[in-house]
Image 1 (cartoon, rainbow, N blue to C red):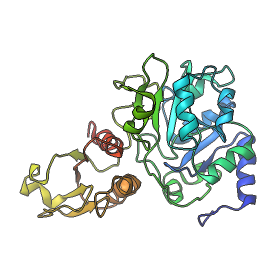
Image 2: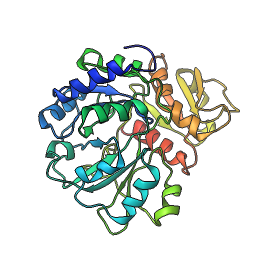
Image 3: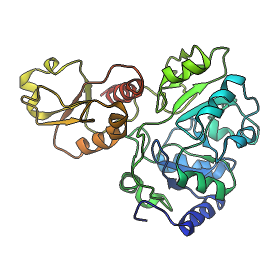
Image 4: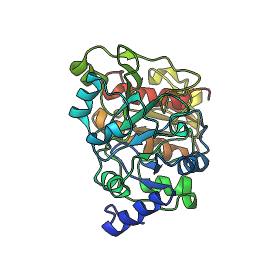
Length: 321
């Protein structure tokens, strides 16, 4: 499929594939997802097979409307209901007690389910026509950089996916923020496209979760979102000795003042705008993967607003490399 506006016929065909137990890749405002009907355990197993994703890593269930939340969640605390009412459709995922209709393969055997309503017309129409909640992680090989265009999906997964709906580039470009409501104080499991500060202004204090060995939400493994070229986090350009710059790329949020000696330099925003930087992050990491540099030296932004999500993705890309 080409172009940026799938036809009604194409969306109908994709929904039919989902109902038949197949997987479909589709756009959201955050990244492209690889979806299957959430209540069909065999179909969800195909997601894990295509991505080579470990079964202990839970998935997010996508809904067409906030009114459908009680189809998958057994309990909806008041604070969760408040965020859902204000920010769905949008880049926030809530983790709630699940209903028995959601198979254990979706939740990695946990009693909770991660749920959101994506803010993309193609995704919403696909889920509506499928008539069922859709479980969907990012449409890429497990642990690699998330896809923000249909071309990224096509390149990484190719013929393993029966159909890819092309909705153009993703507007936000980093995954959704995930908040768990299991504890008395809501807990941030993953920073993402909706800033933590915005959420705390609305529901009060949100705790930070440590990264568990067995994750209770997607994107919590310490090494994730990683390109093939090693990523090294630095605080400033001067941290890289001159002798090491010739084979390296410098990655910054805004144009750097000092580019001396680096094989390549890339910036995510012309003026330091974090929304633009987030939208360009994964595509830029993929671009650098296609170069001959041996290492990417990345300077993360201050961890405020969307800077928290960008810094998080860069740290995970760099972990254990």
